[in-house]
Image (cartoon, rainbow, N blue to C red; front, side):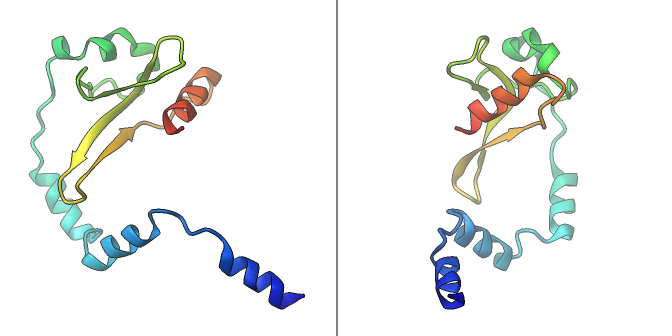
Length: 121
């Protein structure tokens, strides 16, 4: 019986990003010293609020108003009343993928949690 259970454990589907994550860790990309240096080298430019119309019009859903998101980078939800979520699409050149950066939803408002999961799926 135990052998079958162990076999089932081995058969469990791997997380689809597991191999990529292992390669990134092995490459040293998560070295805290490198990350801190890269962060310090970032430009601290904020976009003009004129290019952040959706962000500006949905401030009630924004938890970090100091970091506006331009309309061209904002994630638009489908099947949501106002289609807004405070999330941005960014390109990570080293990873060669477009990724989404978002804030943790304000869990005191159920619609924010629903919107977060709409974005995921």
